[in-house]
Length: 158
View 1 (cartoon, one colour):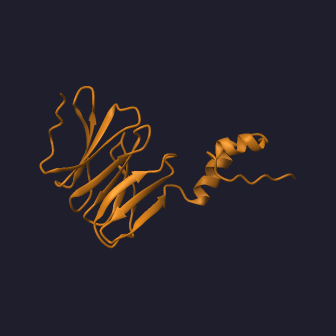
View 2 (cartoon, rainbow, N blue to C red; view 1 turned 45 degrees about the vertical axis):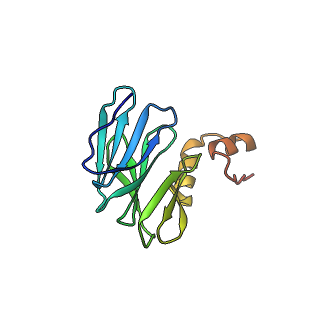
View 3 (cartoon, one colour; view 1 turned 30 degrees about the vertical axis):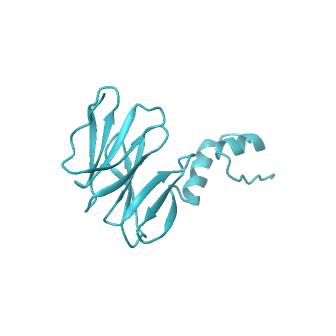
């Protein structure tokens, strides 16, 4: 049996990465932690919420962590650097649940304010910019759909 010990408060939620190699924990001490499942080693501590962290979710490859807190915010973290990439506001009460969409492009959250929300990680402008960076030649409809991960694709014929 593997034991993960290191929080100064109750552990409120846990989540595995897609391949099962990483474990994230949310705690009443106001932090989340990332653990190596095989060794039990704490890889990183995520501090930045002003209240207990109630929920965690890792994206498929474990490169991003979402946390939900009593402070009514959702934070998106880079698991490599430990830095906050984005803070989502909008809930008017405790954020009690967070989850990445299967495609990793949005985060769903649930709150004591009796609402569920879905926040896109990239705006339309960001997606457009990313698509432009990828395109160096004309694409077929199938290639366009593949690059935009199944989202609608606009085709132009000059």
